[in-house]
Length: 85
Image (tube, rainbow, N blue to C red):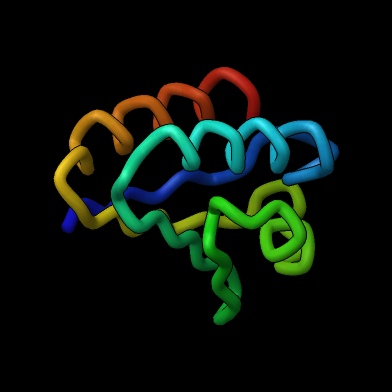
């Protein structure tokens, strides 16, 4: 299992567009990808779950990735977060 944290820098937080992008990215991988924020969690493949955790600016996201392609998934998700969130 690979975990990493990311602090959201976007003033809009995790809104519809990045949630949709993260969800689409997660569906490319066979690994299970879960994100946690403020004692809430979501399956990253499910955009509605991502939106329901209501992540704002300066909040910390903890990603947990487990599976055969976890390394590649972690790298791509981390890169996306750094560019867009």
